[in-house]
Each structure stands twice: as C-alpha cells, then as structure tokens.
Image 1: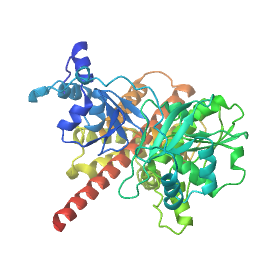
Image 2: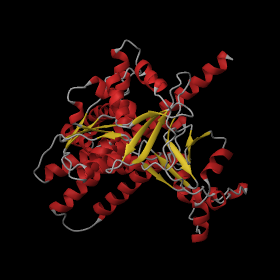
Image 3: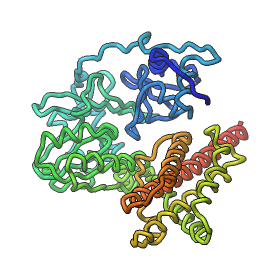
Length: 477
C-alpha cells in the first residue's frame, strides 16, 4: 500500500474505535466476562472499549494494533479500515460507550453451610476433605448464598479480603467461573507459609489439587493461584514474604501454560529470582492428574507445537546447508533468494498455490545465513560447526516471544536484509567487532526465517483442519 498521511486526529479516531462494536459487526461472538468481553474465536482475548488484551501471551493494545494483529493489515490499511475506508462504515467510539465506573469490591453473601461446595470439590474434583476444611476455617473458601458458587478469597497482608474468584458447583455443561467485580489481581487466592519456597498455579482448584497430591508439610510452604497467567499476584507474594527464594511454576501442561512458564521465568530473572523450577503435571493440569489417580479419564497434556516443530525445521536446514555449502557465492545466493521471495509475498498473505515456493525461499535464506556466519567465524579464527550454530539458535529461541502474523514476520526479514546490505556495502576494513555484529545479524535472520517457516506450516495445518471439520459437518447434515 502506498504511503498515506494521517493527521493526529484521524489516528486518534481510528485508535478509539469501540472493539466490542467492531467485532459484533464483523459477526464475531463475544461473551461477557466482568467488565470485559471475551472473544469466542480466540478465548484468551478480551476487549473493553478500544482496548484488547491477549492473556495467553500477555500482549495487548488499542484498536489499530488489534486490526493489524488479527486482521493481518499494515498500519495504513488498519487506520483506513477503522476510519471507514471505501465502505463508509462509522464505528462506535469508546467515548460513546464508556464503561461504567469501577465497582467497590465486596464479597458475595455467605451461605449458611458449604454442603454444595464440599460435594463439588470432593466428589467432582477429588480434593481432600481436610484441606477444604482448613481453607474454609481460614475464611478463604466458602459458598455464596445466591448461586451456591465456591468462592475463593484472596486477602492482603492485613487479612482484609481484596479478591474473590467464583466457581460454579453445578456439574452439567460448562460451569460458571469469574471474579467478583472490583477484585485486585495482586491479592488472588493464596496461602503463605514460613519456608523459602512458593508454588504457582493458574487456578484455585489446581492449587488445591496439587496440595492433595503432595500433602507432606504443605502448610510450611507458600502457594498462589494467579487467576490466569498474570504475574501480579506472584510478585505481590514475593514482595510481602522476603524469605521466598525458590519458585516452582506449576502452570497447565498446554501451549498457553508453557509460554507463560517461559515468560514468568524472564520476569523473575529481572527481579533477581534465579532459583526457578518448572513442574509439569502428567495430564493437562493437576486436577486432571488427581482425577486419573481416582480412576477418572483425564484430559491429556498438550505440548507446544512450536517447540515440537523447531528442531524438525533445524534438522531439515542442516541437510540443506550441506547441499548448498559448495555454492561459489552464498552471499549472492542469499540476495537472489530474497529477491525471488519478495513478489510472492507482496500482499502479505500466503496463497496455497505459492506456499511451498515461499517456504523453499525462506529455508534457503536461513541456510545461507548460517553458512555465512560459519564463514565469518572461520575468518576470525573461531571455527564453528553448522550443528553448533543450529544449537545456538535453539537456545536463543523464546516461544513466548514468537508473536505476530505473517506480515510482521516478513517485515522482520526485510529489516534484517536491509541491515545486512548496509553493513556489507560499507567500505573500509571490517574490524572483529564489525564481523561479530555482522554474524549476529546473520543469525537473527536465520532465526526469523525459521520462525516464519514454522508460522506458515502451522497456519496451513490449522486451515486444513478447519476445512476438514467443515467438510465433515456438511456430510453429517
């Protein structure tokens, strides 16, 4: 798309489009979740006004980058679209549908007994009765009088309730779950012990299940349920309890949990917590392990597809590196391959008819980048094998940072190529520092190519699965 000038007023108008109105007019299904709306197609995405947040990846923003992210548009395309474009659509503005003032936090009224909560947690969730009784005695679990939900209470350092998570006790269909309005996410359901270790979970039931599975001296340790994968409640516990130095991340054994583990490890490292251990359940989560122990069929765990795919792509690249290592000028091969790639992806979208050609170009660019890095290392008298460079790429790969659509990935590759050309075309003697910098860009290009190839492969697999599902549904009608 050609360069388009937008005034600050136009950019502000585009960025303040109400995303609830926008998605509903796109035919998308939204489910109310407290003061936010959860997008059914991406169930980890919530929107409110012009703001969005993807909880599984801890990323978010406003209307423009929402359209860029989920509708694969460039910045000018997104702004034009939100301003109405040729269709002349006038989206509601956030100011026209501003959310009501935040409610003051108040616990739901307590029921006179906990019969339904005990029955649900013991018979359906298999949690130990004594553990439930302990938390009930501490006023951290009770049954509300109106809907008979299990209420998990989070208190601050002065034992004042500041957070409450409600879980439905009815067993038919999807049970209700949600937070009481006004809850402070820093003070979610937790237990503070005296030892130096804290165990971290996504939900209260996971935390109680783990304690049931591993009850020995459990009260000596600290536990916190994040109410998702946000770090706020964990960091609050670490601030309040300075003796805590050992952190055990016990999040769900699925793609979102694996990404959250990696992200939380980074955050903990930034806060000088280096003794961090990831504990994974055998099945999807700790309650599923508890169900399996009691003879119930559990929901299976799920490995992260990118972590599975990454070494497969690298193995294929090693073979390709051997194939092209005899090329007379790998640098020209890299440039020629990039020139061949550009027209195939000029629209920013991959069409089925050129998918394999695009992947082949990207594979060749990755292999060339690795071989050029290897040559630089030889020139600096630090010889390295291609296999060792590949292992370095795998070490540098962070699945929780591998974000964005195809357009942003191709833009990363374009930026790497631009930087490489500038560095290569610069006249004069290249110092060792220059060579190291050049090698770093080559490796970054190789990694960005691998990330892009994985994205294309996984997106195509998802498209095939969707088409197969739709075909099966048509046949069953």
